Length: 117
Image 1 (tube, rainbow, N blue to C red):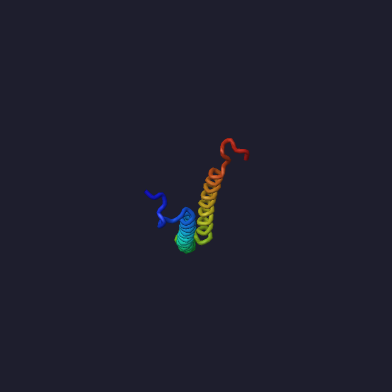
Image 2: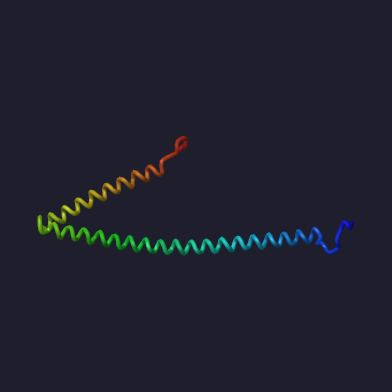
């Protein structure tokens, strides 16, 4: 029974191959995550553009709705009072939404129990 087969690679050769394989694996992982990050960045940019477009169209829709409401009320109570009524109602809604937003932000950023803040 032979202890060493001359065709078997030496420990040094095995370690060299292992190190090379590990480096190649590491490069492949880095390349994979770079590709994944680029794809996700593209998705995020596309989503951001769509969100901004939706917000702009939404603001236009709200403006059209308010103008339409003023024109509709103008036939009943006159243009000045219609404008005043719509402005006051809109300001009240804005105040309620702003108050809710402030409360939610305060709740979200409150100090944790036991923290020194």
